[in-house]
Length: 518
Image 1 (cartoon, rainbow, N blue to C red):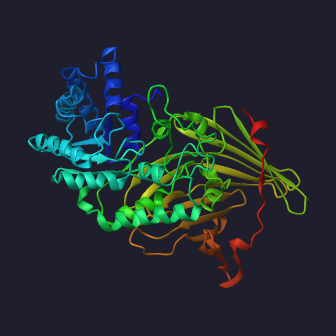
Image 2 (cartoon, one colour):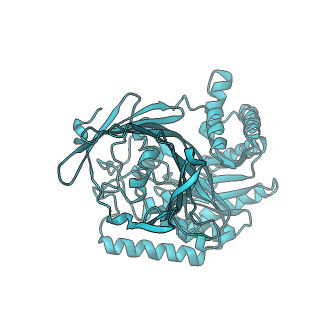
């Protein structure tokens, strides 16, 4: 989106806790237009160098490292002596000048999707080796990535064979969960969203063999970075033919339909991440997003974290209608008791995009219970601790029968397991329920640490009487997704134990998508 200028992107990346950014040529051109009123010529390297220096300063202000420049395309495989080959090396030298200006030593080269290039891996490797020798004089390196729509080198195994043949210390791999899963396992042109022509069991077995081979054959020091990226299941599927401009279906899919990982996509990215980590790789992890769907794919906010964590899904793995796509759109739903005795109504609305804020109201008229509140989020990320989502907001629960109100704050959410490839949710920190009746509940969430210490999904709560000097009345302990115990602090006796799975749940009933608020 044009409103997402490079300075705003860098600020958002820094605020989210990232350490570095991959700089793309489209960002350089766009920032040049912002500075000078017109987009620069992609081959005017003198102008691009000045823009690069300005970008380097912007990154410095946010304490961000520029990890690499990308995407350098259609470089390798042109016939020797051809105009195309001469142009490819001239472009490479120009990009090296930009790399010096922005302060990065790594160039990402995507496996070529051009026609008319050699199919010989020896010749592709020779071109990369020649460029690597030129770049070595500047202490620069190449991260070679398989593009799943490439002409000849579309898999991780293909680019690894080429890198091995090139045999240069400054050539390594840029692996990408999308580029591998989106080529070997998924297909945007089929109804199933999967590679067809073999059974699902055969597909899964082939995918597992590929991952096992990656884990056992690629040296960790030859993986320069891993990009974590997902994709939407295309409904309807893309046409199985090139677009007029020559873009292949998987290329179109890559350019326009890659959401944040685990936010509406369906690729087995955890499997690929796990395989890469089994090599011993512990270097740069990058999150890559190319999502042209924009605001229409904003997902449920924090108040739906519990059903999402417990596997709430439409079963197809595809993108679903979001909770609130546009400001002012209402999401309406109803929870019906199993005995049909009462209904709880839900009304939710996204009331801000920048930052994203969701307002929510629930009420049960028969029982005189209602809840109103809002939630915003501050998100950060690190490879060791995972995704860290601080929830800002509160809800107020009103009990008309007892004329009481209870204000509840929200815990911090975590997505852990990135280093192992086995992702799981956690809650962390404290939240509070303050009641007009004079009681205060302090709830502490304490799960596994990064070293595996502690109990997963652990929770303890203490209810105190503020009017009686903060004297403890009840304590609750256990796991918030499993078994909980309630103890009377006055008698030290256990008054109840129960398992969360034994509690009856009511399904949220919503109108058909075509009948919902547009």
